[in-house]
Length: 470
Image 1 (cartoon, helix red, strand yellow):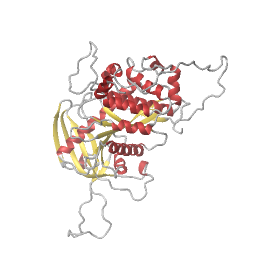
Image 2 (tube, rainbow, N blue to C red):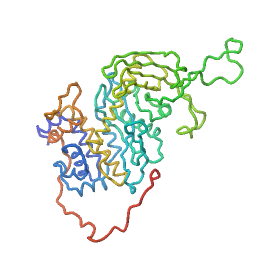
Image 3 (cartoon, rainbow, N blue to C red):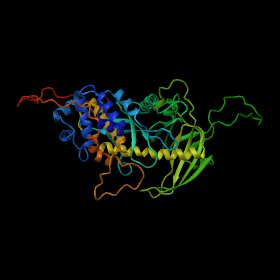
Image 4 (spheres, rainbow, N blue to C red):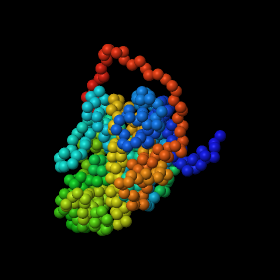
């Protein structure tokens, strides 16, 4: 029987309560402790620094032994949880279009030789030439971007990259699965605008677009400044200047377009100038029907048949000023659609700038929710913890319109019309937690196990795994 109070709570927090109920159903083994562990992440005071410290929160009613047992022996139905995360409200841009951002973030484990499936992860640092390769578990994320300047993103998928995985191929599979789940949830229907996939320069953009040719998507990403492209071949002409094709092999490509060589740049086909608050004058120049030069290496090494011709558009973005830089360099963008107009070009480069909101999400996951804080040994435990963190972030996104701003005396009030930041929503979540659903069962009294007898040693040391080979 549902009381009047429960009915009011369900009406006020229906989507959040429904997601929490579905989350509990996605935990078939050790579900009570895993669910309360997720609540402890949401309601802990301050950033999560240790995993065992979460057992001291009031929301985690079980001991620290149950906490470790939940991560070690528990089970998360990832397939069902993926659908649950995608079934909630998905953010869109101002035109109602879904914009997905893809990126890789690393869970660094440099001092864990007993942990398998570690790979060398690229870690950036301040200063030129300060990047490092550190062992860890790289994870590929897919998130839906919101319009405007905000630190909110809708995390939709996370997958750990194993040693030897092709990042572009794994990302294409993730995007394909996310699109299928969006269709099942009713967020995308036939006739809607194609989904825009935004990524950074670490991806092979033409190959990603080629792998997603059968999907209603468009790929947008940043290019390295040393790339070379080709225009389409000119119309065939005879040697005497008459119409028709001359004898011989027809040309496959036209003039060369080298990004670092301005002499190879013809007059842009489309140019727009926009006044921005942060960057001053932003000028965008566009060229269409450009195909990259492909070679049988890297991802194209095992391609059967002749290499394809992948036409697209190139956008050169130059700004008047850039915070932290004296002379801003132009940013080169590639779009999988072979045509451009001024309206779409402005929308595209602004959508690319929104991709950096995913960096704020990564920082929040690591520094506040403690995604990379546990020192788990097996990658399966890391996967369970990753999906608990992703479920916690989804709950914060659903609760941001129902949370009050518990602002400290020294903090400034929000001056923008967007909702509260993720950190401030988490600060007020304990008060909202009391009003929402709690599907877990009460803990049963028990005694701790005997453990290892005193004075004995471990005669079965863990196996050491080499980096990159599992």
